[in-house]
Image (tube, rainbow, N blue to C red; front, side):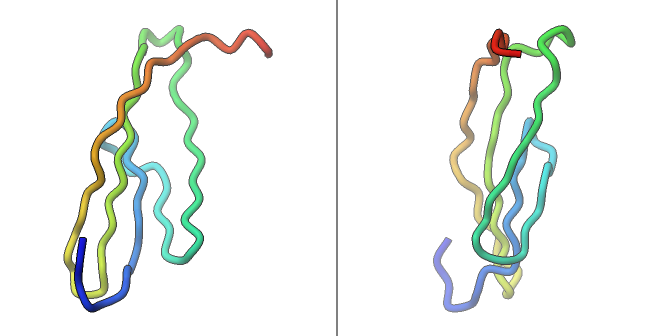
Length: 72
């Protein structure tokens, strides 16, 4: 996104749904996925930024394969 105004907020989308929304730097997020027992094997993430002029930009969508956590 290119514009002459400031970023108003940034949202992390997990499987298309907003997980956290942040309105100030630094933008740091954490997301908890569904347990593998739910049958979910992949998760997608995307970032959506909105500037003070109302313009919206989307990052590329990233898809990750979920694996069991054997350290727990």
